[in-house]
Image (tube, rainbow, N blue to C red):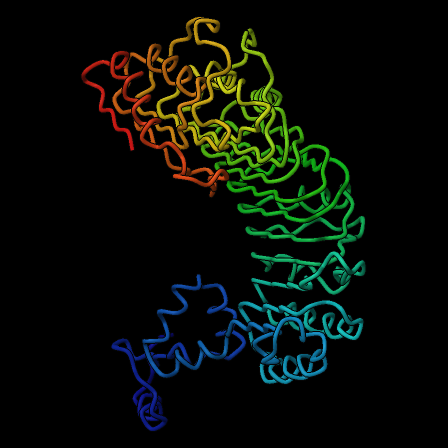
Length: 474
């Protein structure tokens, strides 16, 4: 037997316009494959690689259009203001159904639906659209149903887990669910290939949410915002691939994740315990709190984020305690860059120096930024002296930047404490302008005494700073 075509077969191939390879076999072009096979192949390509194929030929461009990314934004589709969107629900439904009908049987890489869920008429159609996504081998699914005034509505769209089979569950890689109710069945075993998940304003119990998240074993990126659990957000199951975690404006009592590879963590909301003690590779943490006692936050973060390398802390309604004797054995042994946003209330003007307690927990810090705000700090001559704190060496500190300097005694003493205990210091920058937030001078007249604050900074530090340190006052 031979694989070579006979001369008669070769002639018949030429007659049909088929190309023949050197070994006599007919050459089958990629676009000649069955459409369902083509859809399957191109749907597996990364978006950038898929886009590049469109320049190869007109056939490939046809394939690009045949495997589209469909986005339906209510405001854009109905050509109306957001406030009037609820009046155009039927038009939106008609437009979406018309487009999906044209793409029936095709692979659809991405399906995004953005419409205010204020009309129960949407429920049936949303189920149909999810079913379409599952049958179209969709990888990226967005259901952004949050109304503009979402707090005025209680009903949520119930996510139809019953429409998902093992194949469609495995294909999903990115999901955004907003203004949805999650009630997974007990047999649900998660989204095994989901890599990115954004959930917003969900109705879900902490038990169900933990059940879903703990079974997303390949999750890399996770954002949770405006989800009121009124309970702990705890995921004890290992999320070994999770690199990014963002929790914002949720009603919680605690956050705990077992995410050993986590690199970035962002949190905005009320002060609650945060346990990321297993995240040994945590590079960046951004913590923004509504209200808290500064020293209490420090103690909590030492327990919950012991491995963080770069930390930004902002407390909008900050309270300082008269506490400076630091005997806590815990330290941020990996922290290299600390950024503090310090808002000082009038009653705390005499306590500014107590914020040095944070520094005492950072023995290996290399870069320090402190951004002060609070106009009552201007030239305030109240508070303790640095001699009351004792010495604490910051042997690795090289760069320090202070903004919002108003020449308050606490600020001056803070600066001198750091300078006198940082032998490796190379750069010091002091800025009298406000960086932490926009602050207005409330007293009228000629405005804040910037020049006097600069003079005090120069006079106070010029003697204490070694000559080789680059010193700049703005």
